[in-house]
Amino acid sequence: QAESTKRRNRKAEWCHTVAKMSVRKSQRWLQSSMSMLTDSSSIEISQDDENNLVIFDGVLVDKNERHESYETFGTNELEYESDEENIAAEVGNKCGEVCEGVSENGLTCCNPGSHSRCVHSLYGKPKSAEEIESIIGPNEDGGHIWRAHVLPNDFDADGTVRFLKPRDYDPKKKAIKPRRGVFPITEKDLFSSLVCIAGKESSAEAASNSGGDKGGNSSTLKNLVSTISSTGSSSQTIINEEGNPRWIFSGVLNGWPGLTCLELRKIEVRYVSGLKGGWTTHWSAKKHGPRNIPPTFPDIEKYRSGSRIGSKMLKTMTGKNINAGDVRATFRSPSWASRGWSEESPGFLFWFESTAEIPRMRYGTDLALGSDDALCERVHMINHRYAVGEKESAKDRLTYHSLVFLEWDHGKYGTVVEIGYLNGIGGYSGKSNWFHDKDDKENGTAMYRALPPEMVKPWKTGVSEIRCSDVPASNLDELMSYIENYTGPTKRFVDPNCSFSHDVRLTYCSRRNIATYLLNYIRRDQTYSELRRNCQTFSADLCGFLAGKNDISPYHPINKIEYHNRMHLFLYESSKYKQSNLGKKSA
Image 1 (tube, rainbow, N blue to C red):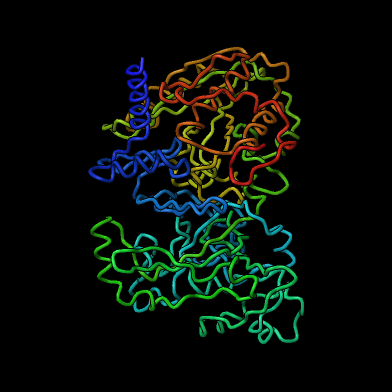
Image 2 (tube, rainbow, N blue to C red):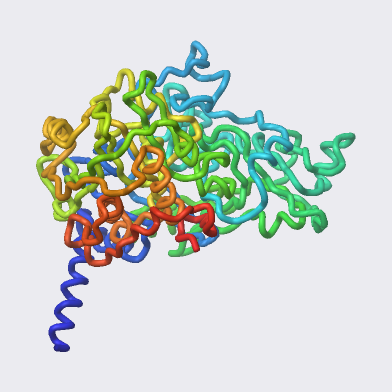
């Protein structure tokens, strides 16, 4: 019996390893696989090195158009650094953007961030402190964390680009490319877009803003940029008795319309000492905020001197470029932003009404206010692998995506329901496998044009969103016919099948009811895990709930290992539970 138990344990471990297996070669294969097994928020994206393709949540992408990102959730300081690129980079003219406010030279915009297709940044014109306070909310943990690469003002002086990778720079426009994963921003642009709220004025501020407000609640950094940049430090050490000052970025960060109001929490510098390299804190809100010390740009030359030999040795050992003197800023979004795309309509659930006269995107609790009384009649679970080219890796052959297809009593259209990475659609220009216009580079997709600007931001792999998309197919046969048209190793789907079909047996099954159930589910638990909570576990939960069956399980055997039925999350009013800020389970 003991030997049998050991064999079962070894088999389970092997299944876990295979499910997490990366196609990277040599030593990096083991490293990436172990990283995925130990941290659910650091999920490796399936890759095919020979074909230069990566799978992102149902989207086939050329990995040369994706780039590295840093992700930190809450205050856990869990850093995720991807060697491959994992943010859709070149949106520009590839997706049919037409910015209504763009100038003739294409470099400026009269209203940056006003709609989903605008890729222009906005710096140096922050909102008033009163407006920012109403948006940013109270000083509390829980907002999503974003990290920006801060560059010195002369990073491209004399035609030589320093501190920035060539793929993030446009040599023709001599400017930083928009919508990059590391959010490059210059020192001047950063500090000219900061506003200080809820704190006393420091001595430097008081001198610069003499004759202004005495409370310090409306002070900005506009008059401080030259002072801070020249001195590099502040001697103010007065302890604030009225609440710590908060430094808020106000603008549009690196062309992402969804990143407009972020609290600066930390400024760090990369160092190399001998054979060690890492990040050291130059300024932090926690340490320097109570003393009214404003953020400053560090003296990067101090960190670069004598680091060249160490950087080369570390690159030889790790295969990574560790550039001493790199500066990054850590921002935190408002706490409400971890619960929804807007404060007024929480819940990471959207419904794309593509069959409407004017296609529109709705999200959050507003979905429960609709007047559509269509009834859901049948539910199906559909599974498929992603098309990654002629050569599939071992993990590609094991990776199946599951979704739920709903049929309505009016017979006009059906609805595809699936779960995926948070901001996965907004971060990749509204491209979806379920519409013909996904590959329309000239005009872009109808979904992209319908996206509100607050939904366009980089995706996060440890948090999830539920996506509902109305499609022209009104029944299973029509949907499978659509899938068949895009089935093939170089198209969209591989090995599609329907593993479950049943009548909907819920008493209350209108469109509004379904939206309410889905809101309850996603607001109770926002996490995304490759093994424990993913597209297959969600599809099993939803099919079992709508059909009234308790024996529905995920499609692939590997996902059945740690599956626990969670149909109860659909039933109970999520607003009456203690809400989680970081994508964790609610209590």
